[in-house]
Image 1 (spheres, rainbow, N blue to C red):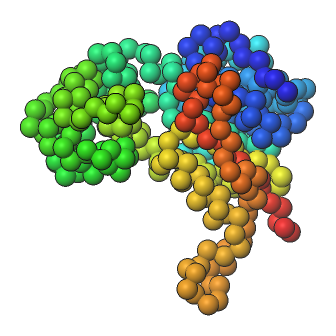
Image 2 (tube, rainbow, N blue to C red; image 1 turned 180 degrees about the horizontal axis):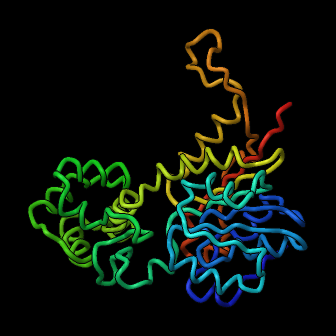
Length: 319
């Protein structure tokens, strides 16, 4: 199976691990699926193609700009594509509102899209000047500027370390506190380049990890992921699958540990001689190791080089 993307999808964004994700979901005609991060609609379109006739996809995105774009991308599918501007942390409520449970498959394509990176005034890119915003939705109150200009030095350093895994987090935080306030992305990126030593071994911009940390904090992404995974587990019917595409180790670790926990019959501490938790396995891990992009895909779309796809299947009550 080779999924076909609409030209409108590929104008700003190329879906990562497209064929692998759809194949891993074991999409079937007439199935019910949820794309938790619909973006430009590339994955949703491929799922709709494979689930025809009769398939339905609910596409969720916290970004209203993405929803507007996906409406155009998926307009050929009419009522089979249901688009919802919300955060997947509310996955259960969204599905219940649309009488959409149980489902055959749920997809999470994490991180942010090339469209968001390219949009002016969103603050996701350090390569163009824009306000320090980074919100997926303007319904959110916290911005990157609030963090940069308001957090204490130690809190800022801890955030950059925890969410960006930046080993120069304390040096960066100290410089930010000394030179603030900051109003634009380019101001902040220039400061980071001044205080973080460049390495000839990597071509990664010194501001990359700090910007990642700010984006994760502004959108509370890791908490949303944990919450969304738990709700996805409960919405799946027996044999239904959840597939997650992650782009950095923090996300991948959460997915891996969640799948491992839900594949065990007991989650008591190893030193405890008898089980008292009553936990029973709900998922079977399909991907013992994460699926990565092929060399051909990485050449076409360099963003895919860091992508990891993990898949699990819902067990029946008797398993």
